[in-house]
Length: 77
Image (cartoon, rainbow, N blue to C red; front, top):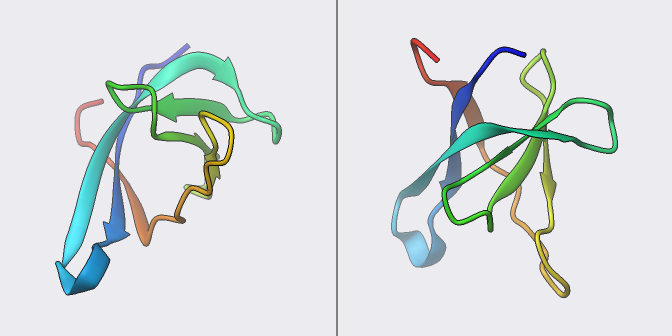
């Protein structure tokens, strides 16, 4: 399994620009069969396909994760 790291960019709240979250590949597979990536806290989780398509995954009940504006592979990962 190759390792991987992505930067997920979200539109900031209240016009604060952009929020960037770095996620690393986990051992999990998402509902679409693609690898799941998570941030260091495990709260931000996303299934990312080999074509860069992102599906945000809730990490707890009542969570409605925002969809990122972009997903960019971190060079060298």
